[in-house]
Image (cartoon, rainbow, N blue to C red; front, top):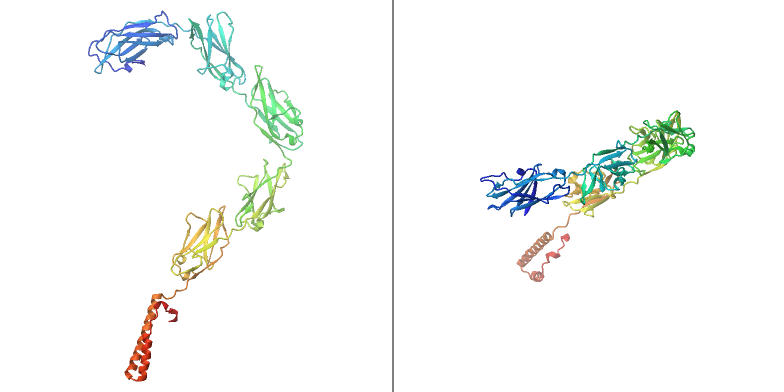
Length: 619
């Protein structure tokens, strides 16, 4: 396996040799094919043959006296060939080789081989490159001609053109390449033609040619370079008008002048309105040059009218060597008519014209145009508004004189209706009124809906000591509310009567009033209300329907206690009966004995009543 390695200096690749012993014998060096003179494009085989030795050859190296060196590592064999491509005249020189063996990490060098001289035939001489125009500075849109001339008397040539080092293929940058017939018996010419130059045509141009020799095409060296630059575009024309403001009264003359800067000897001018070229006579126009001047042109409208308003521009063309080179168009100027004045623009904040009671209402009147002085007027339902009416304020915008604001700090029913505005413009000391603006209607927003009040327990009857929860919910989809709770008409402050106020989880449209332990103080009539944030203003809603909270009555005595009391009473009665019977028995009378017998029968037939049948309410 051979791995060739190109090296400028052998020492940069190989380990520093260590020579514990004498150098190896010199190798035999040969080249093939052998020629007196090689042509560019030839390949020469350089063969280095080392005499057989005990140690294996590791590296072959080839040298030239021109500072060229190549190293090739080998894994076996005593012979190696390196193919040298002849690509330039510098490949000529005296060549030799040597080799290295490696043992135990040390390299042993051989003596240098015999020298062989390689001669390279010079390439064809460089061509001559020329450009038209000779300066290489060309105007955009003009043709560019680049000519490559090959010296000598060769009959078969091929030409190549390059722009910034890259070869030009016919058709690139709109180019055309053609070979001309020889002007003399010793010259052949090729031309690169670019019919219309643009920014892609600029750069550094060179050329080369190939000459056919011995069946092969031999490339010449490159020509000297020529640089092609684009001439700066013509400067913009200057457009001016009379009157200078561009604001003209109907029926007065309008004069527009186009001036070409620079010192061109010949120009031709064009005028445009709203992008379309003006032909003399259009809209009653006249086009003429200034007296004793060729660098400017005037467009005149003897009587201005609506048709003469719009955006005007102009352009010119300069004659350069018979070619008319167009300049960019001028900056645009606008011509407007003073009469009639345009309508003012009226806007309202809030834009919908629907305003909540108590929030500000701002109406703005803006005058179009560029006059220096205006006067504004506002109207409601056709009647002019005087500052202070309905609490209104009239003021200009900051750093602005072309608009006026009518402000109502707190809107109410009196601020609803149809609003318009108008303005007057000062024209040479005369106040010219403009038509009134389009009307906008201001209406009052419907009041906010009632909140919904609910409670737990729903009946409103609560036992003493158990929790009482009252919830206030705001209908609608506003993004921000504030809630209030009331008891018997007085607002409840969080902490009153041990209350707590909190929002529901993941909800901002409701609020809960909680009494952890209800008591007599928590009974009464409860209501709630809310406020909604409208453009930074808190608008209150009416209060909710009222709910009444009452305390549940005290429950009857527990059954076990009632049963116990009843049993004690029965036992007491029985005890009294026994005492009576005992006293009668002591007397010993028959009649008493009969009564005792009857009583005994009564007692013996007595059965105690179950406690569960005793009605405590009858005790």
